Each structure stands twice: as C-alpha cells, then as structure tokens.
Image (cartoon, rainbow, N blue to C red; front, top):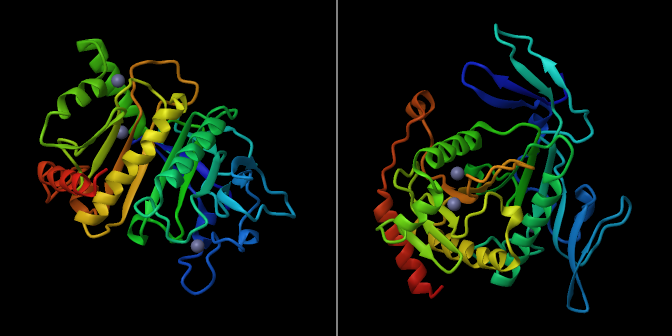
Length: 342
Ligand SMILES: [Zn+2]
Ligand SMILES: [Zn+2]
Ligand SMILES: [Zn+2]
C-alpha cells in the first residue's frame, strides 16, 4: 500500500490518515538550501497562487510548470509529500476490519503549503502588519477555494512553529489540508454549540466573548477580536482568538475583519514569544464544514504552545495537566501586549 487512505476508527470514533509515503519526508533544512527561499522556487511544485506586486499594486498570479514567478510575496503550492492526494478518486470503501460497517475512504484530499514571506525568518512576531495582512488574505483565498472543491467537507488550516511543533522547515509557512470528512474535534465543538443553542438560546462563543472580556483571562481585545486564555487551557499559554461578530466560517469575513486579524495575531504571537521564551506552537482555524448551512457555530483560532510533551496520562485519559494557570498566562500576555503598545 503506498496510497494514503482515510480510516474511521469505530472504537474511538475518530478519523486517521494512513499515509505510508509521508515516511520519506526530508527532515530539516540545515544541511542544504531552504526550499522556500527566493531563488529556490524550482525545489517546490508550481504554485497555483502567487501574490506579487506590479507597480506597487498587489497582483495574484500562478506559476507555470516550467516557469516560476520570481518576484513573489506569498506562494501557495501542493505539499511535496501530501497527506492526501487530489489526483486520487474520492471513493468510499467497505470496512475491512471489525464488526461495524467501519468506513474508509480513498486518500483523496488537498494538502497545500502557504509560504508567508520571501524573508527566511519573517514569522508572525517578526513580520510587519502589512505583511501579515497579506498572509491572512492568502489564508482566505486558499480556504475559500478549497471549500468549494467537490467532495471536500472540511478545510483545516494550521501553522507549525518549531521542530517540536512539527515544523520540518524553518522558513515561515502554514499548511492547509482539505478533507472529505469532518474531523471529530470540530464535529464535537459543533455538537456542543448546537446543544447550547437548543437549551439556552444564542451562541456559546458569543456568550463566552461577553463573559471573558471582563475576566482575568482576557489577553487582547479590539473592535473585532477578543483573545482569551481559555478557562480550562490544555497547555501553558494556550490562547483562543474569537471574532466578536457571530459567523460560522472565516471565509465569510469582511476585508476589515481580516486586516484586524493580522494585528491581533501579531500582538498575541509577539507576546507569546516575549513571555514564554519563543516556544514552539501550533495554531489553526476552527471553522464550520464546507457548504454547511447551520448557524450555531462560531469560527475561531486556537493557539497551542508546545511547551510540555504530552505523556502517557494525556494519551490514555484525554486529560491534560497544565502547570500554568490561564489567569497567570493571560496576565503576562496582556501586560506584554500593553507594553509593546499594540
Ligand atoms: Zn528560507
Ligand atoms: Zn457566536
Ligand atoms: Zn475550537
């Protein structure tokens, strides 16, 4: 078996991608050149979306198979070692194992890389607000496009920073995996939000924003976003960034909300670097499934610093032990943001 396959675990009720070809993935870029730096575009597949500037104006271009755009600001191209492949047909397969009608699917899906800047160390805490606005706009373009692909049910955009957080290449980049299934973490959040709406009315996340904006867990607030250290943070300095306007999916945001997101992200990630000594982290979007018509979900971003390795207890119980109270984390992050004048 060399093709990926998406399998449903009927015991744990979750999806797993079996991807044997991912084992060949190169580790690190210290020895050779950085494949994401300008001049090395030929080391990656052609980009289907390239942000560039012509006479100061932003233009959106695409590479050709034989010719790459050289003067780029942001590039998005297929991952060289994709977890899922868009050239495979989407098909449901009868489960081979177990007693239930365990489902599996062919490894159909999309796996893209978004290189956020031509500058090798322009991570969000270093990048300019203008630069980050383009990154957020690229997130929007890529998520929008993938949300309308046939058979795609969920678009997962995430960012790994630091090798401990899964980043095998240092150069600033994010990734997107578009799936033909809705992952259980999101499905669970949607079920909880729906139940809350049924039982109490309104939106769980809107209510959370209202409550936490006056709490010691507040990290950052502006006209469009509120960032909080969640009440039951899994990890030290975990932060959720929640838009104030109720909206199930990031792809329905307004341009001014996306510009504001750049500033909010920069503020929080700058503060995280400052107070927690530049920790590895993952962040990602939680959004409604593609073409979802429901109303009772509210998109947000979760930032998970990776300062402790999940051990046996976490794996066996699904419970976490967090050594930094979220109130303390929020106080430190908020102070750093205020000091820096965001
Ligand atoms: Zn580089
Ligand atoms: Zn809401
Ligand atoms: Zn979430």
